[in-house]
Length: 190
Ligand SMILES: C[S@@+](CC[C@H](N)C(=O)[O-])C[C@H]1O[C@@H](n2cnc3c(N)ncnc32)[C@H](O)[C@@H]1O
Image 1 (cartoon, rainbow, N blue to C red):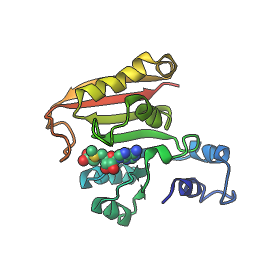
Image 2: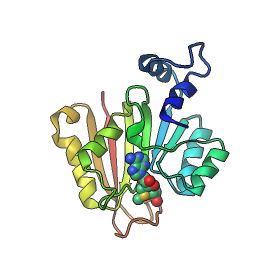
Image 3: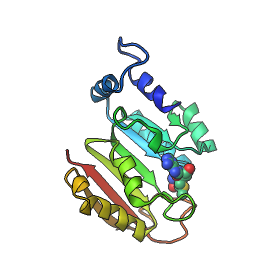
Image 4: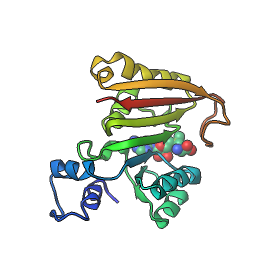
């Protein structure tokens, strides 16, 4: 599924043409069921979480440029998986109540500086919507929270909280080398 197909998908029950403007898509989304986006999901437990939300009536999409066997299984189970970067979603027409993300790269060649990283996700939230991120990196968690706390433009629209987690409370993953875990929650206030 491509980002443009999302727009078509959300309008499949309405009598509008297949190709619609972003504004029309936004209206269609506003009236829709709660929407959740899983960013960078690879693991079966992440897709199981996505399917649980879908079974409770959420419209759930997972997005990752990497498609793992678990992602393929998610598709076969009826899940919507987009093989793309989250930055590829059209922000004005794709808005979510919940964005979940586990262990983004906190350094290395895939590293994205905190401001563009945060803006790509915050711009997808509906008013009241939350982006919940788990990371092993105290530095990345603090830098992300600082983007929201100290950039006046962003601080006027979003709130952030940062809390340490124990390993047992945090989602499992083979990626983090550090034993520390943090949850950062950002909410769009308006
Ligand atoms: C460190 S891995 C974590 C994988 C998994 N969430 C876990 O907890 O084990 C980071 C994942 O984010 C994905 N990713 C990187 N940049 C992304 C982007 N811009 N949009 C969506 N996913 C991205 C990568 O392909 C990779 O699967």
